[in-house]
Length: 363
Image 1 (cartoon, helix red, strand yellow):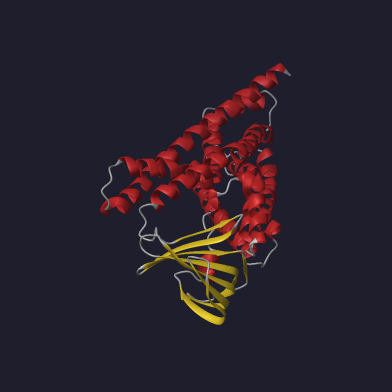
Image 2 (image 1 turned 30 degrees about the horizontal axis):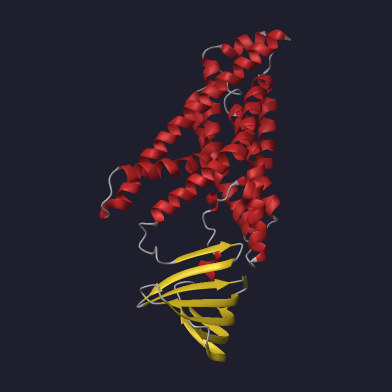
């Protein structure tokens, strides 16, 4: 019993060390690549190197999070090949451990890492991504055009020639923004007048506001019962619906609240629910990557080329990621239920890995 605990502790520590090293390598590669992109973005701005470096440090953790299953796969391949190359696998088998037993400890470590990342690191990463977008957004050419979904409604800010506009709507209903309040300001941000409308058809960038009432800055009604009034905007229904295009800004603990908020505002929640299911599946996705790495390494014969199987494993991982994205797209478009689209790739990997592990355990 005591001997078994020592071996298990050793396997867990060694696998964790490999994961840390591989994560650091991916972080450095991501940081360097993103740094060049940030420098290219700020080439026309008078900023020092500190801003691109800071933005890269804020952005790369989210990149590493999205690539972490791939990190686990490469770590598993590296780890299993190393214990085979050093003949540690022979000593473990002499101690009574099978190939399946050797995989169990890294599998448990991957699941624990998955839960820690989702519950603890994911909220931190979402804060960093928000900070990244806030800082970089201040340098965007379209910084005067903002849109957001809040508990108080849908808010839009637009700057046009000689005028500034702030628009509030209670919710989105199909192609219509309901209960419109449009506030008009001059370039000095002095309030001029307000437009109240029952709804606005935003199927194009030329909005058609219906049943409009115009009120000046003193609260006097200038016009009312205007059946239709046009407003030119840079936003249409597609742009409004894409306000949550970067779901990395939403932490795991806030997803359910965001789903309720989107439902209240009339938005589709399929992408948000898919993100929630992916978060729940994340630890098991990491587990599947460990099992897959074991299939492609522990099952090979001594004389077989390791690089050949490493190449096959990496190729398989690419196919898995593409299949995972394809399945997620089917879920987002309603072709498949969200739960099936997220969990189906993982189940398929488990089935494939189980067959492979049975074969590997007989070696």
